[in-house]
Image 1 (cartoon, rainbow, N blue to C red):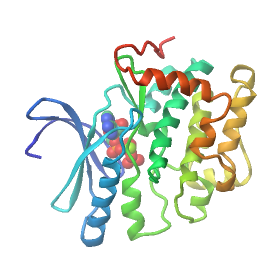
Image 2 (image 1 turned 45 degrees about the vertical axis):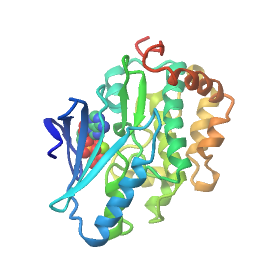
Image 3 (image 1 turned 60 degrees about the vertical axis):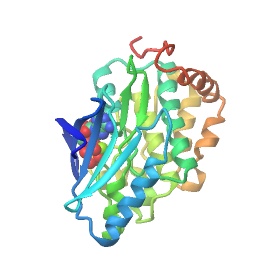
Length: 282
Ligand code: ATP
Ligand code: MG
C-alpha cells in the first residue's frame, strides 16, 4: 500500500471493500479491491494464480488488472478505475425510458467483445451481471467487464457446490451443483441482453424462486415490435437449459444482427477517446 494514497470508499461487497486510490508517483486513479478470505497455503497459491491470469487479459472492454499483493492473509487487487458507474445504475437511471435497438446492440456488442477476449484465454468470468459491468470514456460510451468472480473460486476450493453472490444470472447447471463453464457466462449474457431490452431482470427473487422459474420454463419476452424477432431469438439461444445448446462468443459474433454492429465498434474502439462520437444520451 506504500505506493498508493487511499482517497475514498467506493463500496462494500460480499467479501470485502473497494477503495478509490491514486498512485503516489503520478496521481493516476486506480481501484483497490480487498478480499477478506483467509488466504493460507493452497488458497493463497490459487489466489496468486488467478490474479496472474486476470493480469494477462488486455482488451478495451475489460477492466485492466494491474497488480495484487497479500498482506496479513488478505488479498488486495489493484485495477483500472471506471468513473461513470455501473450498467446496473445506468439502466436504473434511464428507466422508465428504454434504450433504442441501436444502443442495446452497441452495449451488447461491447460486452460480447470483452467476453470473447476472456473466453479466448480460457478464463470464465463467473459473476457476469449488470453490477459488474462498468461505464467509462469521455461520454460514458465505453463499457468494460470487471469484477471477476475470483472470490467464488477461492470459496469453491473450500466449499464445493456453494452458490454465493447474486443469483439472478445463475445458469441452471450451477443450481445442479455442476462446475462453472464457459457457457454459464453465456447464460448470464442472455439475462443481460434481456435486461437491456426490457429494463428489468429476466429472473428475480431468491435462489429458490429463480431455480423454480427456470425449471418451469417461465420466460419473459421482450417487445419484439420494437426490438425485432432476431433479438428475442438471440436471448432464447443463450438461455438454453443445456449448456451445449448455447452458442459461444464466436458464434454470437457471426449472427447477422451482431456482425455489422461489431464492425462499427471495432473501428471506433481503436480511436477512443478522441473520435468516438457515439453517445448513449439520445
Ligand atoms: P459482489 O461482492 O457481489 O461483487 P458488489 O459488486 O456490490 O458485490 P464489490 O465488487 O466489492 O461489491 O464492489 C463494491 C463497489 O465498488 C461497487 O459499487 C462497485 O460498483 C464498485 N467497483 C468495483 N470495481 C470497480 C472499478 N474497477 N471501478 C469503479 N468502481 C468499482
Ligand atoms: Mg462486484
